[in-house]
Image 1 (cartoon, rainbow, N blue to C red):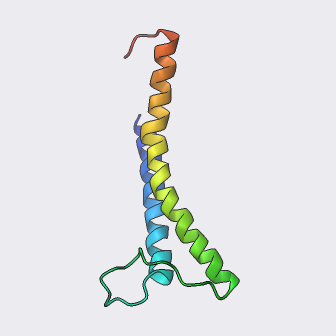
Image 2: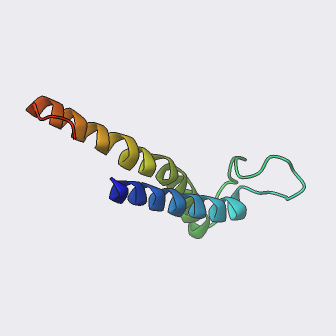
Amino acid sequence: MADEFMKGFALWMLGALGWIIFGGWYRTPSFERIQQLTVAPPEPETMYDAVGIFASDLSFYLMLLGPITFWVLIPAAREIRRASAGEAAE
């Protein structure tokens, strides 16, 4: 169980780090504004901008779906499989 926790935690931290880095580059027009990291990204001017904005979105979903997968879905699937096989809970 600790293995799944650390995998989910690592994906959460990796996604959060990527989201904050790319969000700081592409989603923070100025540091004086209150709303940061959630502003709509600008229209990409180059291919690097498009890749950076895509990496920002990918990091955000990795930050959300990684822990949900390892903390909720995998343990729930194991419990359902154990219950359907008729094994006693440990």
